[in-house]
Length: 385
Picture 1 (cartoon, rainbow, N blue to C red):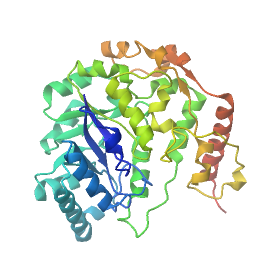
Picture 2 (cartoon, rainbow, N blue to C red; picture 1 turned 90 degrees about the horizontal axis):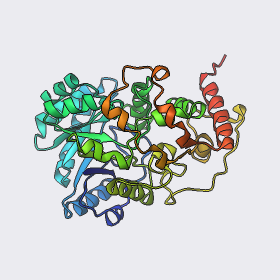
Picture 3 (tube, helix red, strand yellow; picture 1 turned 135 degrees about the horizontal axis):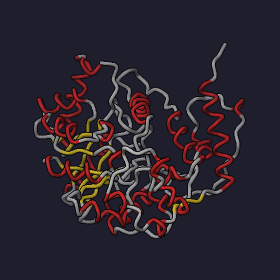
Picture 4 (cartoon, one colour; picture 1 turned 90 degrees about the vertical axis):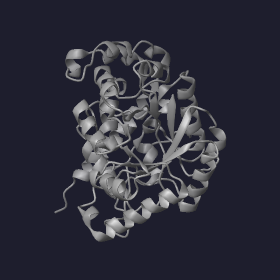
């Protein structure tokens, strides 16, 4: 296994994760003008990143810098932005960064032209989910790719990709997006704009419209948690058997303790207990050092929601953490190895519903979070006279 692990800005992370199967860390500085797939990343600057890259290189570990914003209002073609991108890539090469992740095709060509020694990774945001698409990106000179989560359980497609492509294929294992989610592209656009300052002197607000829709769908039908595109630590071997050995963990917003727990579960290929412990989407406590806080959420009146970006003190009121009994998911992957369900509606297939008893949600959490999500979406839809 080759595991790619998020860097959250805490240099002590390397002391907690010295393992031969960790081949790469990835991340970006907090105030990244070009943004990326995450907004409001924990605070760390260029000097902090430089020290971390120097430290991991001593352990023969590489760093992948994230520049995977995908929307720039065509400003990527202006002299000012090209100059800023050149300076950024030049600095990354100087400090010893091995690879840069993009989703913007123009940025890839720019990097290939001026910095041919930097390896290029294509972001999961590009949503590559079929062989012909993959081969077109390979012709563009992409070295490494995180494939669309939509095909995490499509073994026929994964095997064909492995057979016909020379790129390193990587799968994201612990980000529970719904298969073929219709909100995915829009969600990435929202995040891209919210995380960059290229368009203005200040970052734009991040609006949790898509995330709210997603959480609602899981609360209303917990089978959607089973349908989501996670990969269990125990099932890593199934992917290795078809030749895929590169895997990526999220999330850069989590604490050292959280990242360490998730990484060790996948390195050991085993986790006993709640599989949701390994999924940042269900984390109740991002980046504060503890694994889980005391839950004290409450219903919020729509009249008190005088914001469109959920304030930090209210985030827990919009989150829930299910219990996903990992022991009840043994054998779940077997059906997908034999046949794909990508072209079948869930109502016809019904396979995931057979494993829905593995999921339980606290009734109070379900009631409170659904109430708040409904009110929040109504607030966003509100039209002023």
